[in-house]
Length: 269
Length: 366
Image (cartoon, rainbow over all chains, first blue to last red; front, side, top):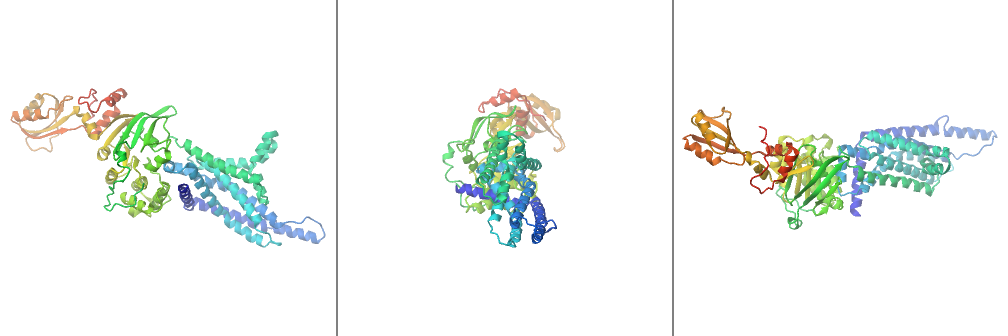
């Protein structure tokens, strides 16, 4: 048990360090922050933004036109975290593409596969590292949101913020885990990114697809939808089935990765 | 299983305490009837050999002969299609983790993380090879000393030359002090001086480590190995010591003779010796005035050295040099791996003890 933990930590640290040593990840982070900050500003402060809209509603109310009250903080958070989720769909395949493809290309997979480390430990270490890196990318934006929400009146608790971001992290971990599996199939990072993006796109739109399909197939497919459960999280709904779904995706990705490394490593080169 | 102490001599010839005595009886590496089939092509067929503890076995063969495949099976990286391989009495497939802990492996291209420094990379390898936390920095330092990497310890691997990267690869294979070291082409990409250093390093590791190395460079084998396994088209063609392999071809002996006296008499005298087939003149440019140099080819299986000397003296000629030319390992290699398949099998069938091999491998190309 101790050696497993020690191996896990070794893989995790090495992987995480490789993200901080790669120019690509800095560029990714910069773009992510830029877009994230831009959307934050647009949603809140633009002429069509939430604050302006609410101000107009207030005016309308003062003029005697009745309308439903708006929970601005709630609306903002749901909208913005959903947007971060969509943005991440483009970022995550790029984060996961090198996880194994790079090891294959550099030949280091041969080192890992001939070291006394179990395959799933390597996979888990790598997944934890890339999820950590993604978390580091999201954290500053979360702070910005917290600052914005701080101005809410009446004040809201941190629960909603935490639940919605937990959903975001679960979504990211699922995508990264499946992306890690696809990365383990090839030595080309570009191919692995494209495959992951295709898969993510499929899981994103599967709900719409399911609605058009009749009967049990449609209902079955609808359960695969990440978007549906992610939306639940952004609305502050902590649904067990969503948690189970995301953890199933994560587990599936880990399992398939370990299996593919076990059986597919002997490509001739 | 790791030693806490560093050798004070710097040479590193320390004997591991416990697993040496009991390992003396059983071979460290045992490979039996190994087959590996990739799709429709057979990479290796019926490979059988064993390596005693402390021995250095050289795998010699042209590219694509199956050296890398055999080594990958030994390290547990590839499963064999048929047959068994055992390292320190652990089956490489069933007890993979136990085997992995006992081997150091340098693949064909060194498995390096280019964005790490030499020291941090070796620390990482030591960690995943289960070196105890307290020993790690000592082991890493020792491996770097042995491979001549101390002045590069904080350099990014990306910035190292090919020769240094190869050394980091070797350091990676020995950092956890494994009883068995498997090196796939350890000297590829090195310049001659580095070559020598690496061979010296490998010889220094023998004794308390069992080593298998592969190469297609012949002088390397005779310089480093106790035993050679020649592999061609997936089959072991011969296994023996470098000396014995050379002796097997001693029926193709030749002599270099330097005489003083009449040229034609000299030639006739040499030709007249029983067992001599051909006499041809050698380049004369470096000989003293009046002396002549000849190459004397002998008939197969005969060694007329003494008769040559006697005949020359008997004729009243001066004998200044008489040198027997052994078939070099290079010639053995050419013979064994370039000839027709059926002759190769005959050559493999020769018992090492038989003084008169029946097979007549063709003479090496001049």
